[in-house]
Image 1: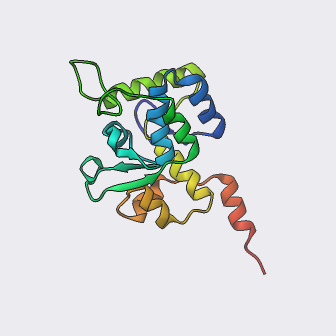
Image 2: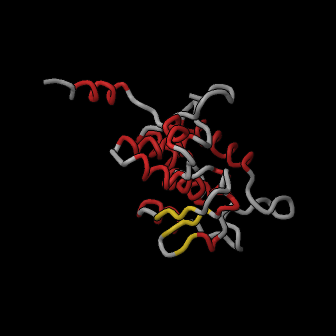
Length: 183
């Protein structure tokens, strides 16, 4: 869990996610931004770099030029829950998350972090960072039995070792793992 900017962002529970998206985030823009981060497992900077043309035909395209390693373009399907969130948000112009007029073209990572901190304060959750949505998404996929190679394609990690450091293993998962051993 993140404390004073140190450590990894918290993996969010189903209840915390529900409360963030119903009570914490106050605008369709905020729900759209963090919904994209959650349902695609992307970094907040990748979501902030999106243009309206990157979202079409039921997919979101994260352009190679806006990804962390700039290795390759990723295309991720939009699940129904994210589709509903995006339908409530209608930005004007070509940029998905515009910044303040005359100050910044796009919403900044600093402002995204402030929006998230304020939302978490409203619902009383600590240890959350913008990266929590990415870690939560990847951990949920892993817990559901999705192969690591598939998760790697969605997340854009260049190697499985890096991806595995993102994934949280719960005490229940460890108990279940050793309970299958026997003869």
